Length: 70
View 1: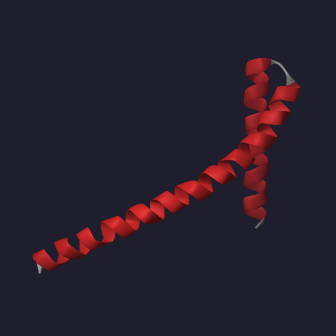
View 2: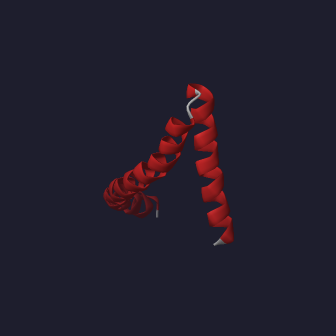
C-alpha cells in the first residue's frame, strides 16, 4: 500500500510540474494534477468493461483453435 501511495504522489507531482512548466501557471498545473487522476479513474472503469467484453468474445475462438489443433 505504501508503494501505491508513493506512486500516486509521484504521478500527481509529475502532472503538476509538466503542466506548470508548459503554461507557467501553478493554478493550471494544480487543477490539472487533481482533475487528471479523477478522469483517468473513470476512463479505467469503462476500459475494463470493454476489455472484459472483448475477452468473452475472443474466448470461444481460442477454444475452437485448441480443439482443431488436438
